[in-house]
Image (cartoon, rainbow, N blue to C red; front, side):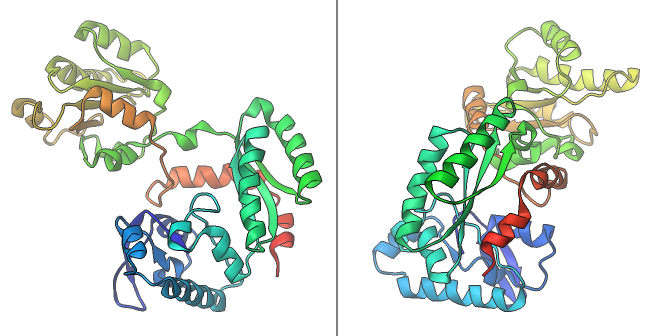
Length: 347
């Protein structure tokens, strides 16, 4: 009902382009929700400047609530089940008078709380959300604990089940072991992060890379070639734009690998240089034209900035990355008690 990061889509009922929360596109297309229109799936969007306009009285609190209630009615009329996703924790949206707990209470919805793995820290985090749900008379249907360290899975499931049942009287609906692949960015994610596009290897946009396998090249070309031939094949290499030898060596190694039919070449190269100070030589860039080769991306940041941005980046599911969406569904489904979930949320 309340979204922050938005994308532009076409509304069939309005016959024009509108903004909706980005997760709506994934859900509508992945689950073929053709019976409802985009406009009713994301009634309130909070873009940059929205909060100031609300505080200045330019946006009506009552109109926000009416938009949410109208959207809920339309989706309910056309559907057997209505699922609402709250953005962040229960208090998100409070500054504009539409936090998650308040919206759930207004619409008569029950709440499923989700937190990342742990014992004390996860419980403490969820307790803050429980108190806000209590304030708005929102029943808590259950809890899902996400990204649990696999070696601590049985322990976490046992003690969390007991803690929530004893303290709140609610069940643990799911306990999900962590799967690092789902948090590994694809090159398409990095294109969005850096607002750029691959200069070659576009067919590999949805190849995923672990941050642990990111390698900053500060050595000679000879050592780099030794590294790329012996290290983990799916490595994201980072170099400065002035290292023409590394860039050309990377391209040449890809061609040699393909000619000799060695192990699959899955490395990629991130070329960095601060905007206005460094740029790739035209002669080098021309060599990428028409090259059906390994993925290379040029970004206008220093190597330090780029690597920090990647380390701090959390990739989100999107409909274009069908492999990751499929893997996510396959991973989560067995660990959630859907029968109990439906029993606890049926009205």
